[in-house]
Image 1 (spheres, rainbow, N blue to C red):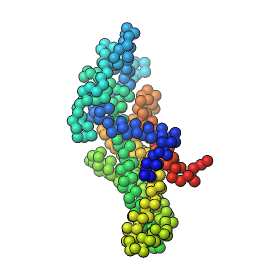
Image 2: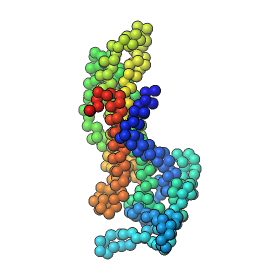
Image 3: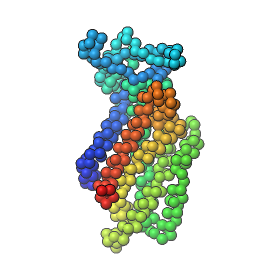
Image 4: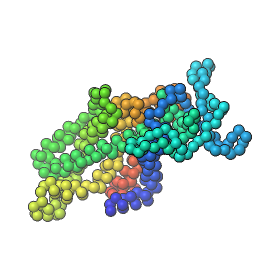
Length: 356
């Protein structure tokens, strides 16, 4: 009931509604990435390194409307600028196909399929956002890489929030020496510089680890250094809740301390938990992107928005290949959308915090 009313309030706010639509579109595209992407995540054509985005035409050479088609690019060397340039090979048209068969893949890793939302014929190349240095389709890699970048935050929260809730609930409920000892430990964890710790831990991970194993370890690392601040806030809320009449009533009927904490006290922190979760996701997206950008997160050939953005750090790529900056733009959009939703949720659940 709370979630339904909260969603209605979010939908009424114009900026939150736009943010919800954007995030909905992003997650929809990521869920159906195998079908939407023209190529599989393992596709690579080394002869097509740094190819610009394909140009799609709907008017033929006679000035008449035509089925959408494109031309392949051909490599040429520019003796003036001393670099490889690409020009359209207009000797053959390659028509765009929708819901046609292409490279085989397994949808969600389970269902064998060949149909793609958009593709072209066997000899054609369709690069909607160009290619990277290894001739891999940037658009397809953005979809597959987004699955990692946009889910790592939620996975970290599933580890972080149960620990923080229970730890803060126990410390606040028992009070006294238990509270002092538990909070001093939490403060010691909070004093550790999180980003530098991430760099150290990620750098000492075994080199032979798969990207999936590295991904799960990064999730655990992010969660284990983020629970302390959350637990401290929960503990403060529990201190003000534990003397309420319904808590005393639960004590009088013989309810155990753990049951009182879990069933009667922690549910009263729901509003704060929802806000905290929404505002925490962007920080984990940025943490993963930062680690991958530094080469300490998800490793090639697997894609994430962070390690894809690493290729755009050279100024020549920024000038001549701006399509490589697309992952950074998507990180900005996703983080901004989560922050807008989090701020709106905070205003809805705690109207006093709203700046008028």
